[in-house]
Image (cartoon, helix red, strand yellow):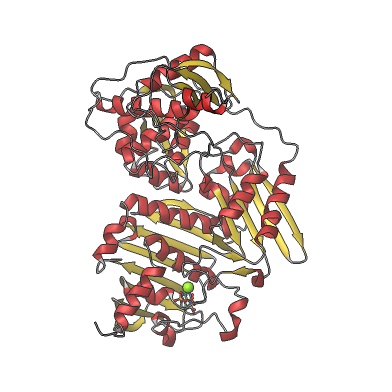
Amino acid sequence: MPIRILPPEVARRIAAGEVVERPASVVKELLENSLDAGATRVSVEIAEGGTRLIRVTDNGCGIESGELELAFRRHATSKLEAEDLGAIATLGFRGEALPSIAAVSDVEAVSRTAGAPSATLVRLEAGEVVESRAAAGPAGTSIAVRNLFRRQPARLKFLRSASAEAGQIATVVSHYALAYPEVAFSLVVDGRETFATSGSGSRREAVSGVYGSGTAAAMIEVSESSEDHSLEALIGAPGLSRASRSYITIFINRRWVRSRTLAFAVEEAYRGLLPAGRYPIAIVDLHLPPSEVDVNVHPAKAEVRLRDERRVFGLVQRPIRAALAGMAAPSYGAAPAWPRAQPLASSWAPDEPAGVPHGGPPQPEVEARQQPLPTRIPVLRPLGQAGTTYVIAEGPAGLYLIDQHAAHERVLFERIRAGRQGGPPAFQGLLAPATLELTPQQEALLDGHREALRSVGFEVEAFAPGRRHRGPGGYILRAVPPLMKADDPGRAFTEVLDLLTREDAPADPLDRLAASLACHAAVRAGHSLSVEEMRDLLRQLEDCETPQTCPHGRPTMLHLSADELARRFARR
Ligand code: ADP
Ligand code: MG
């Protein structure tokens, strides 16, 4: 095959794929443009997870009528002097977003600068301008993106459900709302306003708009600055911990970044204050000299490269740690009720693929060579507990160490799945129904798992259905699954929702929910067990279809064979 240069529109579409991966990336680019334009009000409206419509409207500086078409050409930007790449202060700078978005959708842009007599409207289809004229419109810019990926069926297929995509969009908008408290944000999903912030400039108020007023009131302010950096953070007291990392939000120079290192710096600051598997809520706003930060890594720009990562780790970890110093570790909830051994419902279809872990169990790093286990595990006798985390047990083939949480998760997971197939769900009605304030992400998770939630025994209804309300979504929780302790059902419910976002959760929504519920209800590491309780746990594990791994794919047990022991003690 001869080498050929791609036709321009093909090259354009390939490059667009890099910037515009999914609807949430479109929203991110449009939001950043609005913020770069100095907007104090930004509203986002989406329909069908953003595939039918994404509209971002701002009251920013607007685009001159003669330049609106130009803005949709590649590498057209007003934000960069050619030699400036080392010190970028705006969110955008590549001039890639608008042409990339236009290449994979139909766009209608209306914009007006403050002094202009009228607005200008430009329509593009598949990247080509099909209409351009004067129009009516307020000062600012409104960009509507329709039929995203309609001409890229492969990409469309790769998207998740509308509610999952809407959830990702809600995540993006709410992160920016937290970073820019001086800007009033609102998000309307399929005609309903899911949240709005006031734009008053108070970060605590922005937190209230996104996470609810209770959470906002309980946040601690942290601030620190030196000659070349400043940090402002709102962090949750340890009692506000969450079941997932998605509540750690980090901005560098007002850009939302995904940085494992810095998220870990926040977690490290809470070391010893949170039980295993719990994560803090924190919003960290870090300012560094632009030359310390390389945002030119990936077109989507969510990832940054830091010149001195180790130093920045300390800049984040130290002041948060200092603010938390002296706070006592919270006593975390009550121990879950220990379930008695119960035979599994016989309606469990034996040929149904069992709760297969995704990606297979990670190989534990033990020196002892592990014996392959038979599918079922043998009858085990508990000998004791190590580190209030592992049950030590003996079986016919040697010694076993069982991770109590992982094992109990497996037991509950299979029981939940069996219960789901054994007729109508069993509910535990609440005497006092709990009022829930859900974040936009939680609302989207709720929406995407309605069936699954019902099938395991959660009964949730929208508060005053049909009423548009401001602030976090209001719901009422009327019933929870029987295996859930009902002392704080609202909190338990939101934690189960948060657990659905775990990266290692099963892909099937029903299994994913069962795994989240099991993880929430399972006995935790650090909880001491009586011999009786250990015996119950082992009995129930023996009854499992797939006893060797937890529903997230972690191993439940390590086996040290009698042979191995003899060899290690030089008995043979
Ligand atoms: P970049 O943001 O990297 O410059 P974009 O393709 O996102 O590239 O936008 C191109 C240009 O269009 C911007 O540099 C800016 O001048 C203008 N623009 C885009 N969106 C807006 C907006 N909401 N308000 C004002 N100007 C805008
Ligand atoms: Mg841009």
